[in-house]
Length: 212
Image (cartoon, rainbow, N blue to C red; front, side):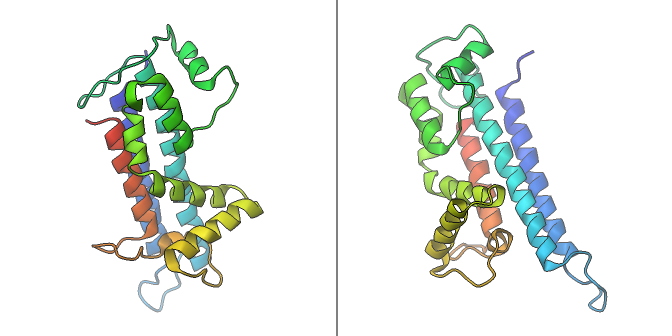
């Protein structure tokens, strides 16, 4: 039985909620209560848990984009919004994946690649191109953060440092990915952390891809 568009957006929403909850737990566990008590986790471990929560949410987002693309290509329609007009009609899910992968064993699902792929396989790239292009900057930043968590490489770290400097005008001493995610994003009303900001952008973009 093929999965449905409504199912995968519910699953993404659940993953995002669980990531928010893990981040909130990590913060609460790091606060001494009563003040004389010892916190359950250190600030360093709190940052690790925040990174884990973010990585989990972003991985769920990438899986969502891939599965939504395949289901739209197979002809499924969202409960609301315009139908996706396909340029081709794959006879099976396996065939759809071959079309998407251009015959390769593996393909990636970065925002830029999905936008190009959507233009090739759907009229006007709908519903992916508009939703992703409207939030390309935030999704690109979220990807940079994800890579800094997942890849212990100089390239990933330098790109993360550049992101932080663009946001904060400097790279604070002892900055980690987790500590950055816990910081309040400037000029947000009400004030929210970078962690909350990026996950909110993921959720909003998903709602535009599969309007329910």
